[in-house]
Amino acid sequence: MIFLQGSEVIFKVALSLLGSHKPLILQHENLETIVDFIKNTLPNLGLVQMEKTISQVFEMDISKQLQAYEVEYHVLQEELIDSSPLSDNQRMDKLEKTNSSLRKQNLDLLEQLQVANGRIQSLEATIEKLLISESKLKQATLALELERSALLQTVQELRGQMTAELRGPEPDLTGPGPTGD
Image 1 (cartoon, rainbow, N blue to C red):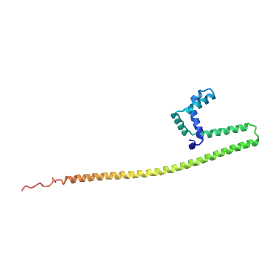
Image 2 (image 1 turned 60 degrees about the horizontal axis):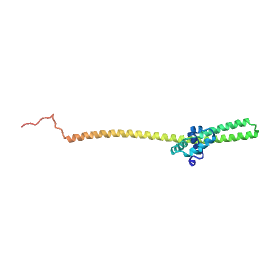
Image 3 (image 1 turned 135 degrees about the vertical axis):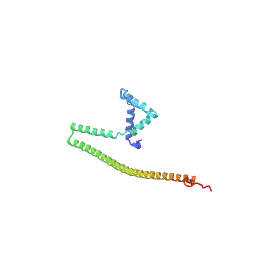
């Protein structure tokens, strides 16, 4: 999982395990008993619990939460900068670092947006092609249904003719009858 999702997966596994055992962890009174619980109980998880944890990890998307926490962290840093008696140079350096970090985030988000827009355009083109294909298939289906109806009608007519031929010529009952000489 580390190779697949990177080192972020360690944090996800920890969050999943802590979240699934939250009621049991909250029953402990101090950090020492919590640590003992984590050391002794978590390594002895059953197969079902492990599979549940792994599926939660794959479904978990913490990147948005982490970005929100990062922004909150930067806001708190700025508040600390404003309240602490730093020199102007130190304050300027910190502000420049924060600005640089925010620009990097902005560029990353812009790149993600461009990728998403490209994907949207690709999907829209695929939808358009599928709609055209669907229209052509509907037209072909309609043509085939009309041809089928015409063929069924021709078969009925041929059956009628064949039945008439098998019966043979019918006697003419309206003409003069046999003469008795």
